[in-house]
Image (cartoon, rainbow, N blue to C red; front, top):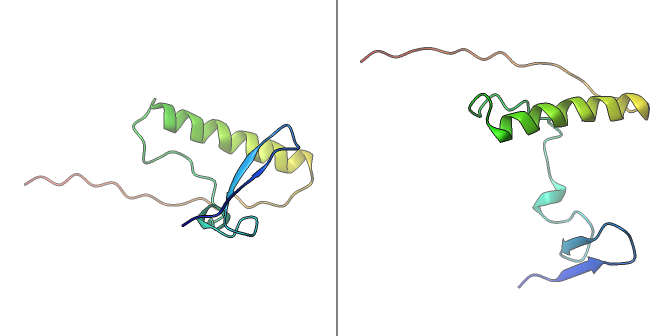
Length: 81
């Protein structure tokens, strides 16, 4: 059974699972900003990933936060059976 808490005295409301903030799965992430490469080009998810990537980089620069754009190599092959 989950213990749900709500923070209601702010403009943004959070629904929390557990006794401590970020103690559940949503508090554990890889710290990766996804580019949307795995989504079909033009797909809403792909577009949102790209927009979020750009917005996150701008936010980090404006607030003097460190970040690393390291890239990733993708190899695409076509298998003919």
